[in-house]
Image: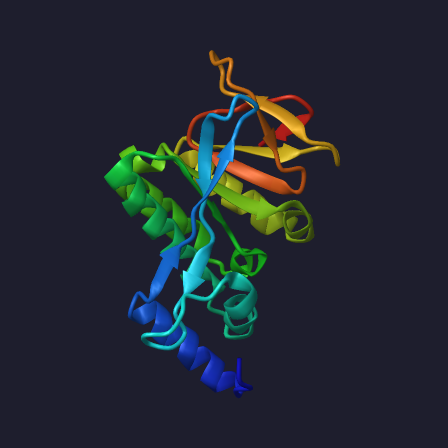
Length: 195
């Protein structure tokens, strides 16, 4: 990717978001019995019209530098909700740690979730544990906002994988040890702290 000045980065990412030149990747996360837990859906951006959809490693530093990660994360959530409404498959969206610093971010996420309550039941939100710890008050506010919409938050308490299951279900899965996960249906997790 060619070198650009800060205002050029902002313009490129803004233009990409404004024209919805974004899509979601899709990687299945399965339990020990190979049953789908959710599709991990990282956001891809087409920074140049007609170009390739770039992975986060190529666009995320630009979005952070341009302070556009909240908008990118909101687009990712909106795309996930749209896809769930079409096929009913659960999806997980990763939220950038930088998005937590936007004072209106949690409220806007809550608004998106409440606007699509049926699809919202099948979406997962993730924030890296280190980022959540570094921005504890902001993470707590996000947890408060999503909890008000009927969501729960689970945080891994150890470096080992944590076994998780839905109440009343025998489905078991491994929760990534470095993630904080929000889910619309309460999750019971051993060795986890629920918020």
